[in-house]
Image (cartoon, rainbow, N blue to C red):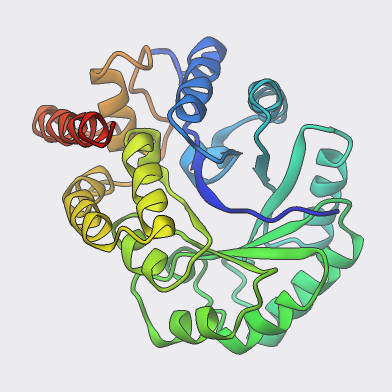
Length: 305
């Protein structure tokens, strides 16, 4: 059960037709595209995939498609499997464990019921002890209503089946600094705030899981590589250039703007989202800014040759 997440992972959207049906060909094409642009792996059934609106059949289809694409490219597939039902989370992971294509599961802090922090730790210990797959903890307190502090995370990191965390706490806070300073090299801290990925990479994060990388895969991969190679001035400049697009792509409930941009770019056949989400508004200004960013990226690549 060895898995060490590193690099930029893309939590792919789930493309729907105008009538709301899963469009498998769009999903497969998008998964190929992000990997070909340098993604270290794909995350299926994350928040960005609108997983809570998918039927069990659709969930299996998404995992099957993403698993096949990842297998073809030789990159890992991570699948979202967490809920606020501890035993149910184990059952979901056991089902995923039957697929050889799944490298790890992304397990969110239990939401809505708001257990104590000790209860959250007990939840993850129970799940990890019974999981056939490595776990990545998903710490996103503005969605779950429960903060998971650095001491609890470091305690969980000692479990051999808990290999990392997606840290999406809305800021570069003291807890994140203490976590990065205190975690072992065998535990991957992955940035989960799209606009804040550059400072976390500068502080030693192992990579990131970024919804906006559905659109800006190549640029975030370049950012990761620049920090890893020690090209500090270039990394700082590119990180600053990515802040505005990342904020714009997340300016409405995720993934509405991302889908609108992908549709405008001709990469998916419809920008449809499922209720309770509503479609995003006009995105031409965002598309124009992204085109300019991509031209700059191509110019940097050409200049480096």
